[in-house]
Length: 191
Image 1 (tube, rainbow, N blue to C red):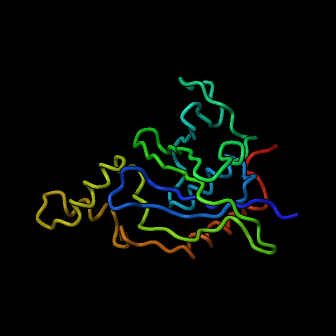
Image 2 (cartoon, rainbow, N blue to C red):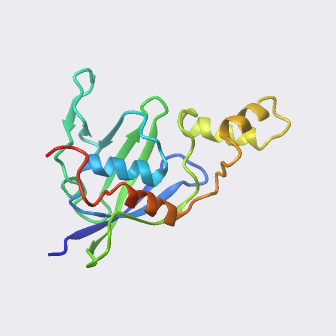
């Protein structure tokens, strides 16, 4: 029996110009799997801590050293937190850099028979590089890299690498990456 599909818009908060992705996922996707989908979709490397929040509670993997009270998210489905269109979650990645993402449930659709989920259907701009100091550090990095007269220009250009283009985004490549990770086939955590 076909299930529900969520069309989500994921926006990196504070990024100007905006950096965002539009994805289709199964409504019953577990939150740890949604985390992995967001990592792949945005272009992060999954090398830092993360959490979700609905404004009332924090949802993450349990950690005995955690200073804040969090809800164990390993068996929570996305549909338990996003129930109707326009519902939102915040997703924070890398507590040091503080990459905040708004996850907006735009539409609830019927699953198409034979279609593979998740899928990236749209987006704009490249993901910032890891460990660049959050949104403000990224904006500074881009300004320095685009100013050949800046004293740190060569260093920042070298750090970004030859292939970095802040405007580049390819939804087909992202979907292919999602498919290579078999997101629809298994959960990343034991049930």
